[in-house]
Length: 173
Image (tube, rainbow, N blue to C red):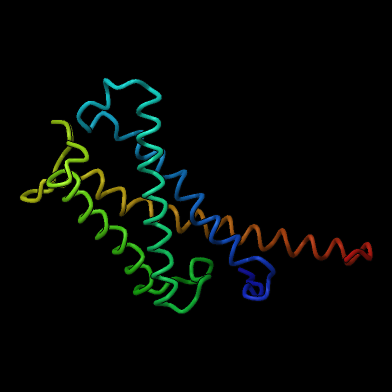
């Protein structure tokens, strides 16, 4: 793979941030909608009420994912870690942050917070009352997010390089 000097590309940090958050939003929204039958009352609710609830949950998920990405970037001291070879510690921190936040939030939301309840269809982690699907969400989706974002960001870098080459050929700035 060819890596450009990422840190010197104008706006590359902002582009990567938007990609991380945007791809995360898309993946989490799909997952939230797929989980509908596993929560009490959601399968019977009006369609737009479900879409709205899942959208609100997805904003939280995307923010958690972005926070996990940012913490991994701080650990690795590299905002662009996803576009390079991943160290185990960086990837582990990235995965664990989202998983830990989910465990704490699910435990609170299904208990004292009374935000939602699982239907009888939701498999639960023994002894915790925490749903397996929300936990799986924070194992599967961060990996998909990392690979998807890496692919998109490297593609963006290549397109910017080609744009610069075309501009230089035609004498444009």
